[in-house]
Every structure is written in structure tokens, then in C-alpha cells.
Image (cartoon, rainbow, N blue to C red; front, side, top):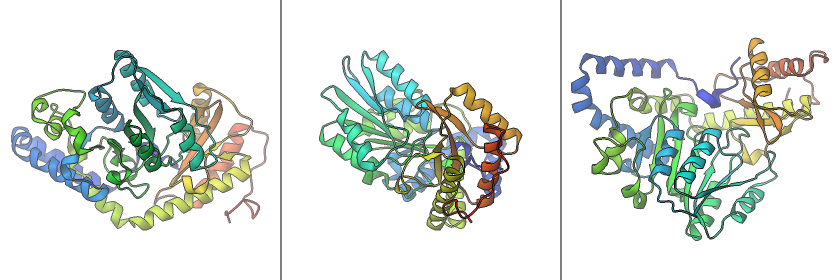
Length: 379
């Protein structure tokens, strides 16, 4: 039973078939493909991203994932000694490590704003982040939807306030494309990155980076290659031989998303995740990370009375998997968390089984749980 769509997505059969067609085409004539076919096709794929998420095709480039895109932005950003990057405690672990390294290389500092695991409101998040910005702050990096806690941050409000102070902004939207409605230019940030291989059904390795037009001249990939002296899109489009088939399947993936319901699918998944989260919270005595308006097709629950580290979380995850339940368990802010996802192939009975197995794994003392009318919204 797969309740972890948020980590690695799922690729529909028709998208996998399209990817195999591209791979076969490449194998038949690699030279002809990379010299004559790929340059046009990758720009057509970028046009799909622009149509879906706003901006012009030339604003969009591809990377293997959001972490790669963020590293490119950090490598390109002119951060001086004594200056500061600000982020939050909810930043994805790999991104947090990258920010720390890039800051140290420049003689700068990284300030991490402590945002509670369970948040009360958008206003609370806004005030905490904006309150940490100072005269030395040059770059603010925030999540759009957090990884460990599945919380939607009010990105537009935060970005606009930061830009009013002259601070550049990078939004990590790894979980956003295909999970929430998205108009990237309207957010107002300088850079936005997301993964199409999570919620938009693209093959794994389909990361996207949008760069505001006035930032493109100074934004280059971490790997500098033949396109380096030709500008923003050429530098990202070609950094050497690699598997570009996930990028060229973006249209097929987006078409699948529409076939599965498009905006109706977003609403269906959001409602299912909310229903499941309420039932799990009641049955397990857990706390949901954020109010309903700050959640979408994922929900994270803090397991009451349980603390632990990454090793403990991993052990619980493996025990759940041994019992047929695939769901991420993490250690965050001193507590253990479980995060559920809702996608087209899930139904409410999946979460009932998840609760039953989780309760047995965590204690072993409980009878098999019974879902009843006492569980909010679960019938």
C-alpha cells in the first residue's frame, strides 16, 4: 500500500511508454539526436512548463531535481563576506547542507529561523520569517510546501515583503507542481524550482527552474560547459551527455494529469488527505502539522509522546514496510512524524490500514483499531 507519492511520484504507463520511445530514438542515432533534435525539443518542453506555470519558455530550464537547481542558484549568487542567507528550520535537509557550504565558501553566514513543527496560521509563519531578516540578509530561501511537515508556506506574502527590503528570494517548490495551482511569476520571487516527477507524473529526474528575467544573465548551472558563454537557457540546456528523456516527457505527463482530472484531481486529493489526516490524528492521538488551509495532498502528523532520531524513524518506516505500508517516517524538531500522501490510486481504506499497522508497530499493546464515527470525517 503506497502512501508516499510525495517522495518519488508514480509514472503512468503511457508516460513510461513515451520515455522508452525517446530512449529508443536516442539509441538509434545519438549524434543526430543531441546535435539536431534535442535543442529544439528541450525548448518545446520548456514551453509546456511556461504554459502550465507562467512566464515565458525562456524563463524555464531543466535540472535533474530541485536540489540541483538550488545549488545552481547558490553557486551563481554573488554573496559577499559577512553577508547572510536566511532560511527556516523546515528547509529540506540536502538544501540546508548546500546553503551552509555555499555560505562558508563565501565567508557568509546562514541563519535558520526556527518555525514550529505544528504551526497555527500563515501569519505566524510570516512574522517569524520576516522578523529574522536584517541589514546583512542578501538571500532568503523558503519552501513553498515543506517536506517533513507538508505545510504550505504563504510564499507570495513572504517574498513580496522580502523584496520590499531589497532581499533576493529563492522558493523551493519541490512538491508544488501538480499538487497545488501554481502561477510562478505572480509569486514575485527571483528564482523558483519544482519537481515535475513528484505530483505531475513525469519520469524521475524532471526538475524545473524558473528565473526572473532580470536575474537570468547571472544565473548559470553548477556544471559549466559549452553553453556557459551563451547565456541562461543554453548553459542549462547543455552541460554534457545525460539522460534527457524525463524532460522530453513533460507534455505527456501534463496531459496525463489533465486526463486524471486536472484541477478536480487537486481538489479530490486535498480532500482525501484531509479526511485521512483527521482520522489518523483522532485514532493515534497525533497532531496535524498545520490548519487545513495550509495543506494540500499531503499531511504530516506529529506522533504524541514519541521522540527519536533519524535511526529510530528509519526503523519504524522499515517495520511499516514489512507490514505492507509504505509511508515516510521522520525525526523533526525533537519528535517523530509520519507523512501521508493522497493520489488518484489511493482511497480512504488505505489510511485505515495504515493506522492499524502503525498503532501495532508503535506499541504492540493495542487491539486492532476500529474506525468509527468518533474519527472526524472518516466513515
